[in-house]
Image 1 (cartoon, rainbow, N blue to C red):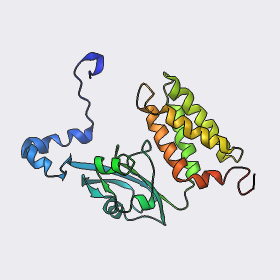
Image 2 (cartoon, rainbow, N blue to C red):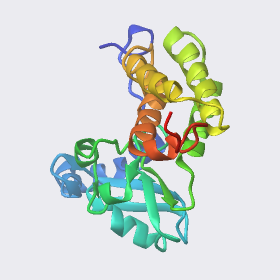
Image 3 (cartoon, one colour):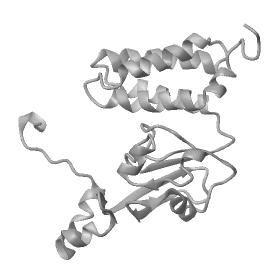
Length: 222
């Protein structure tokens, strides 16, 4: 692999650089003692949504999701779903994250990703199809348009989800959304395609009944 302009490249964010003084002063081994054996160090979690005290909380890698939510004052209402790594990561149903610990390996094993640590908490007042539509509208707007799977795929998914949420869609729209998500993943020039196809696919699969309830023939024998 090569970096920018074919040269060695290191890209760090403030969260990474903030760990450097501790490592320099205390040593790498002391830093490795924070977190889990394969996921060392602290992590900043930006908690938003249905919690009493949204904010940024720092914990060692491997902290339980329950402890982070407790620090944020607890869930307001009945927990329905959580996105643990920012909007580009697959959603987890309440029962999937009950015993979840937050590090890269554990989240991957749970079928999602820790990503940026942007935790979005949703209670049972949230309409998942609406969340899916907002998600794809954002990514369709942000697409640079350079590659076809991202440019056309995000726009097409947006159009189909608008039909579904507007009560004018059909079962073929949901099937086509899932097929497009599978086609787009891993086939764009940058991770943008995965960033919207993974969360949209997870929402449609895990909350299929909510999407199907919006179809015009829902509840009929057709």
